[in-house]
Amino acid sequence: MEEPINVFVLGTAGCGKSTLVAAYADWMYRNQYSTTLVNLDPGVETLPYEPDVDVRDLFTLSEVMEDYSLGPNGAQIVAADMLALNAKKLKDDISSKESHYIIYDTPGQLELFTFREASKELMNGLYPKRSAMLYLIDPFNAKTPSGFISQLMLSSLCKLRFQIPSMDLISKMDMITFEDEERLQGWIDHPERLLDDTFTESSQTGSLNVELNIGIHRALDEMGQFGNIRKASSVTQNGVEEIYRFVQMALGAGEDLEKI
Ligand SMILES: Nc1nc2c(ncn2[C@@H]2O[C@H](COP(=O)(O)OP(=O)(O)O)[C@@H](O)[C@H]2O)c(=O)[nH]1
Ligand SMILES: [Mg+2]
Image 1 (cartoon, rainbow, N blue to C red):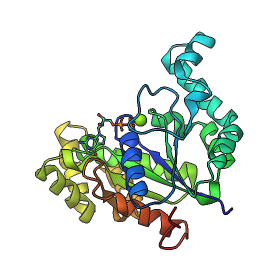
Image 2 (cartoon, rainbow, N blue to C red):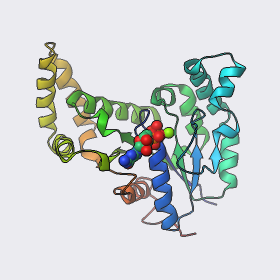
Image 3 (spheres, rainbow, N blue to C red):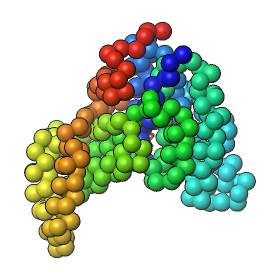
Image 4 (cartoon, rainbow, N blue to C red):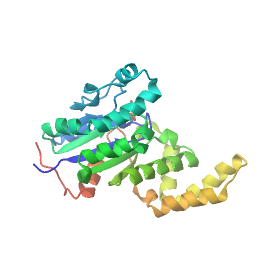
């Protein structure tokens, strides 16, 4: 069997990863594409979908806390490393499902997944050549220019770390006001407006660092960060089909998967 397509959903805590996995899976099922859902978050209590492969069957965060006498922060670091050590086991479980499409829900703490070597090892131990990622931007963390820029920079760091095709997606679109949506779209369509607003925002704090603002803006622009931002809602499912199209194109998988 050809290697399956793998989609990793990344983003800061609470940005809507697990909910998007549920919405995406729902869309896939309705279109009769076979899909395997993988939960990589050992600390999550309840999920809005039924995982087919679940890291919590191997270990949970509370077990790690107890076994190693650690608090939640220390346990999360150990858990991130344990995830990589279990890459082979996870891959065996995933491949036993014989699905063409795998969606991964990643741990709540983005920095643990992105900045530790273990996560790269995990990804490399799975299907690195057939993997893409979705970086979710929580619109409530992107209300100010510096908030939005921070999200774009985190997304760039994820791209730098994993070096796989990536799509930025503003989540929870059904929750934001028309004004907030207009402002965000204005920044996406006219990045120079974002730079102007950054100056206004920083000057209000009395510590305007012109070089820093211009340098970061230029770097994001040169990386093409502004040209590739989409919007979605897991409640209305608007934007979900676009994710599927993006992944198919990005991984050279053609227009459509085989139906079940
Ligand atoms: N209205 C609405 N709520 C959402 C959406 N996506 C996530 N949420 C809510 O945001 C909260 C955090 O979502 P969750 O998926 O657990 O975030 P995670 O920590 O990134 O996995 C939950 O209360 C979700 O119900 C969305 O598209 N629309
Ligand atoms: Mg989650």
